[in-house]
Image (cartoon, rainbow, N blue to C red; front, side, top):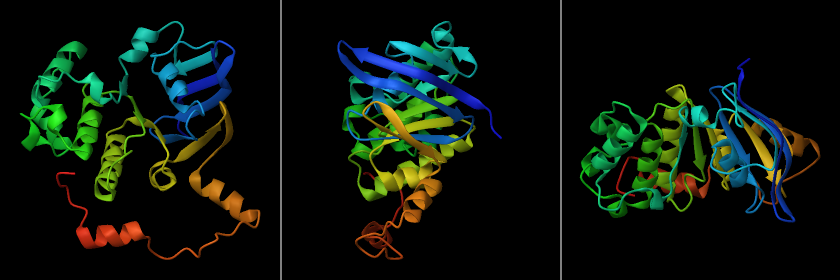
Length: 253
């Protein structure tokens, strides 16, 4: 059995009288893709930001790769990769220059073109981030998380707003990241995405984890209660039809 690379125990985050995270506890196994699922305001992003050392906790304990968050936040930063939002990129630099800049900040020797090749963006090396399509921006943001060769990568709703082709291509990219040896922790509102990517998921609601298991086990538990779909499940979905007719190859999403 894989060892736990992230351990969270009794995590609490309060904002005045409001408690956003209410004593959450869970572990993430080394080398897995782990999903945090829940509605808006459930506490998913706050939990991730605390683990990422970006937000202070109120109480509780967090360990990342054996390091205590309270004692070794700087050391934790060196082994994680965090997906940046659009505002995190310098508007006047092209993609190659952004990677070179981040490489210097991490004190790493990185070949920008080789890194762009991993996300099929070599032709956009001299383009600015703002000139990219939605899917290209997401692929580049994932590429930047790889610059410091992290043990753990955090992705917050990585495919929101993408079309079906771009979304499926991002799924493949996330699987490739895991195959490189990284542990991936992601949040998503797309249940089919979590079912496809995640070995285990934690369902968060109102600041608490209400269930944690593999997607298949959670589905089986629901079926065992006698649950039935209102609409008969077919062998394919409309998204499958769309992708079959339009193709799934890389394109300018």
